[in-house]
Image 1 (cartoon, rainbow, N blue to C red):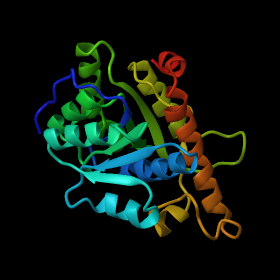
Image 2 (cartoon, rainbow, N blue to C red):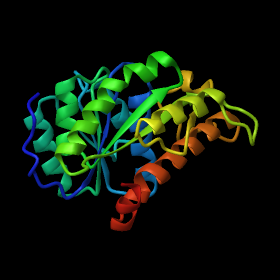
Image 3 (cartoon, one colour):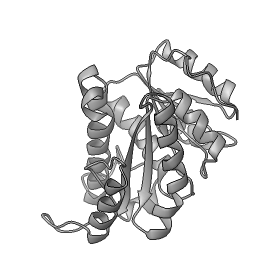
Length: 238
């Protein structure tokens, strides 16, 4: 990939999901965010940069009404964004599993917001450092753009009123380094192992764990995405 001209006009709000290592739940978060936004009546689309477009295909099976594109090169991604912007207010861009430096540069040149999911382990936090540093460098070059946030994924569920010590520890570390960490956290339930999607479970009345998964996705979408869709929200989150 080569970097896209930063002057490219993007009427839609573009959100990139990226991480320097595989397995943080990036794609699960991107796909479920698309479904949640669609269910809210938002005009949302997804660009899948994974080879073969397997994630776009999964979303097409689950909700055919959500428009998707597959694009791997910088120029194809730019073309897809320009095309989708004509009819969509939000475009989600799911980066490849192990996002390279060149791909991070591309994401930062087209996105308004970059979301970096991280699991609560030293290995995962360290594995995300290269992507976080590259985002920061882009922000310095591009007058603070793109906006970015970290979200903790697969946090152990605890009784009401209690917080994960690991989450508190890593949150403090990352905030001290100057990174923004979302207030919401995505808890881990066995339902994640059973289905690609945690929203709209047809057995929701029986499987209450899937309800909790959907609640976490909805909280993430509201805090990290919906709150940024107005000029006031964008300023407050910068």
